[in-house]
Length: 219
Image: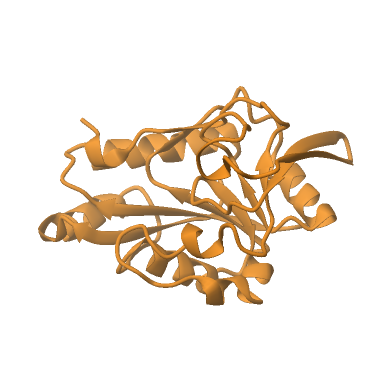
């Protein structure tokens, strides 16, 4: 059976509701999928003087919390330090639409393994040509496995939005393309619109499966 773990990436903002935001995200994940091994990766920026306090609060909820230099630094380390077949990469301020995500992690991993998908994203907008995908030729596919059928679209945009990756594929080459940079830079702009193909959960025009609450401005 394929294995999967969860990484949640956060940073120390000035928002007083940091813990509320990340706990809401984690609950949303569990309610939509299931409880799996989780690690939190915390960038102390931009509010470094409160970072130790934030990490102490995080450790009351999450078993493993690591301090990083940036999102890309944590992203690379999360892949290197993982031992599971697949990894769910999740930034700290997203909500899942459980009414629109109709498959288990086991079914999704089975689909990814069978078809050769190494990056599957849950979209923050309907699956249409918009944003970074404005000029992408979205193609729709489906895969039928034991007791399930998953529809998905292909794209050359490998976004940081909530996504599952094939760890071995990244260790085998994709990780070397990521550049460790400050803030949220260094990942999607290095992997998108290149010679790579990712997948988006759902058929063409399928509604947004996740909502970005933008923790920087949370009240």
